[in-house]
Length: 449
Image (cartoon, rainbow, N blue to C red; front, side):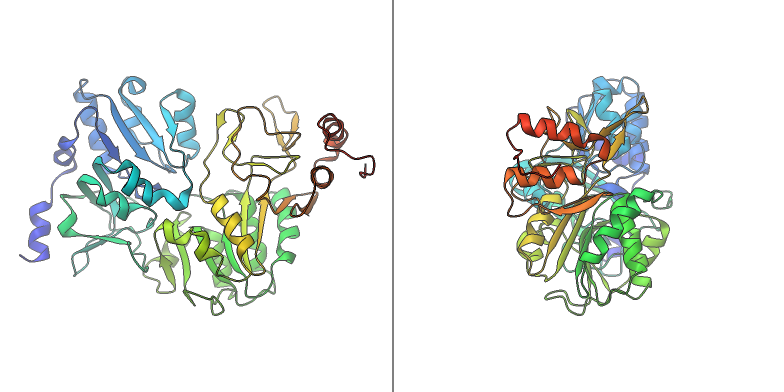
């Protein structure tokens, strides 16, 4: 049987496809821009029509739009949403009491499916149209989809003509033989994730980091304004022959590429290729990576493997933090007990960059954040806010950067760390931090005040 004939046999409506879902099951939506659209709407409509369809467990991550199933009548008592990394949308679900975080170290995620989850009832996600060989490209997310497919009872793909085709090395597509049902959606534009306006603080932090980056460096940028500010400044710099090996591919890389700064010719592996595990940004980014042979999508257990990262000389890792305490512990997932985002691959890249010859990892944050009443609080804390989650332990933290400076914590004693970190805290909080450091016995008489 030819692939086109097989396609016709497996083609169903979204309404027909979601009939496979039963109460109490696990339904996996994939990740980020690959979340289904037509299938999600159809399943939500079915849940409204069938109040006894309940106790459903959904799994996704970095939602770029509100999943329709989370808006059904009495959603809090009928389902839970489990996120690998929460967007602002999913954070609201956590606050409402039926959103939860899937704890992870991102590089291990495919193994979680293969060795720990082992079984999921229904997997549904968006893909690019089938090619002549019978393959549906995963598009913007190679991350863990191949592993999820291996342990799914039912696989439903939602074809979107607008999904970029992302080339790679392995585990970037699924063959029609493995697919149970095919749904042709309404081909909506691929959801975008804007980087947000770059602030003066973001620019100040970027100006401290970029001079630390040498020619031929290999770059990893995290989510948020500060990494994007660094990317923008790199695009305007005199740096040359840069490489890319990053968890998330963002708009800043497109700017750096278009400025002629990226060649990848000095990478020890995947020479000339920009390597990433998922992409999220604007249409500019999606148009750039679509069918681009310079790009290389790959599963996260390859991209974020510290053994792979460490082989790339002059590896530069640039990530955000919620807060940093005077011991050098980095909290990037929560503010106290309130969940913010997730661990992602921050620890993977912090470890890998330090093992790289000439490598550096930078943890960035503004010195303060504004409270609801307009007052400021310091992101440099005596200790992580009670209930907060430590993403990077104090032994692994290398450079910490705020708009007030950049410090390297490697090889330092507790009193040296306290002095360095207080020196880049907002001036209004330094005396208070010194007083707390004295109480904690991590302040020497010889410390600079």
